[in-house]
Image (cartoon, rainbow, N blue to C red):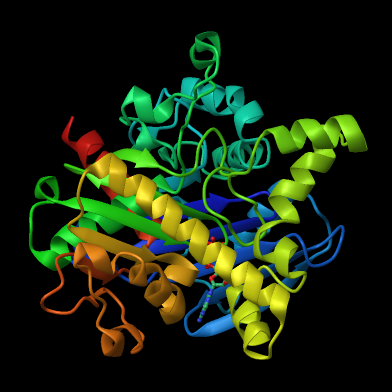
Length: 408
Ligand code: ADP
């Protein structure tokens, strides 16, 4: 069985193809047989398509910024040239899309129908940089594979059962009724990590209180009880919560009012400042990448040091918030680019919670752990580093929907 995954962002299109022999879900995530990535940010009016398959890596320049044509070109590489992996596109059984915003309507992976497409389009005002790219991807597939089932896996779905007191903002109630509430994001990753934690610890998911820390370019925490996300740091948009690579995370909303009144900021200027020019990038003036920040602070750069200290402070204080929501903690999970790779971030974060009896084993922490418990034996809380596999999680959802479709 062949499952194609499309993960479209505002400035990139990532994609991969899984081939499940015997139509079985393997116990461990398999490697995709083909991976492709279009980066639309390198040169204006162009895209760079990178494809990896058959042990070969190819870079192709797309001489247009037409995203739909880019997707067609990307799909061509599946069936043509030296990196060809299948004979014809019709061998693909199902296509899964990562969709950032599903509003309150979708609490699980859903087969894409005209109604689902209309709902994704209706939610564009809530995810203006992502949902249009998802529609584009869905329609491109419709054009080349008219009858293939397509599945939407929503980033918001895992958080859709958050209790209303976690989801609502303390503003006039009518706005809650109009959809201004916390939705939460990175849901596929938080869910995957919670399930993987239960597997690694060999304990049922519904017996665990877990905090998952998804720390990539975007960062969010989720408080998970009985397998359900009961609180999370991202909110109405992925801007709320933790300090991130280029995003500010939560700030006093009155700052925006002040900037509008005193500096005549427009909505677009505020959007750019808070989403693209803040976080590590904005504070350090060096980079959005933690590796560059650590290098600079080791050379004595004081703004890099400040950016790092603020990041840790933000992480610790939001962890405190999640702890309060959970009323206890069995397992702390670190995942994504920073969470999986930065021993110093894990160490500094855990230090603040030693009073709980949570103890990090520094040798394990410093030894590039993957899918491993890095707490000491006598720690009261397990500390896991889990390699998140969002594409594989989407493929699993597709497999399950495909099987239920065959069964009915
Ligand atoms: P995205 O959120 O775009 O999916 P990732 O989860 O891949 O991103 O995380 C990217 C970030 O991870 C980079 O910006 C970088 O700061 C961080 N990162 C990656 N590798 C390392 C490393 N070895 N040490 C510290 N940080 C790292």
